[in-house]
Image (tube, rainbow, N blue to C red; front, side, top):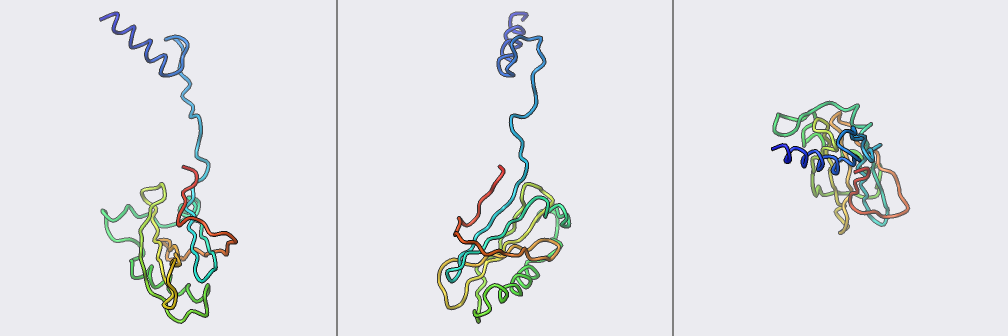
Length: 157
């Protein structure tokens, strides 16, 4: 049994990067996440728009533990109505829009959620316009962007 214990100590030393069993391993992380964000891009009628949702933004939002626990602070119907009111601000010339999807997201934190509501102009086929809606009932403002991007990119992971 004594030989088995020494082998375990030796293996633990190798795994932890120690030079011998008596050394206290360095447990500091090799890298840390300094920020995390969800960036979403939309291209509609030749215009590129993007939104960014950061952990700092979500920290100020109401807590909700998710669909298993109960109703969210903002219902799906409310999120759709909030995002629909934003549409004319981005494309005032579009007369009608079709709802193409509603997604519920949590970014890193199990108690911070938001919706992404997607719309497509009635007269256009192609990409939809995605508008994030936070659990406070606030739509995240979209910004014009010179370059199209992927549908969604996670940074900081």
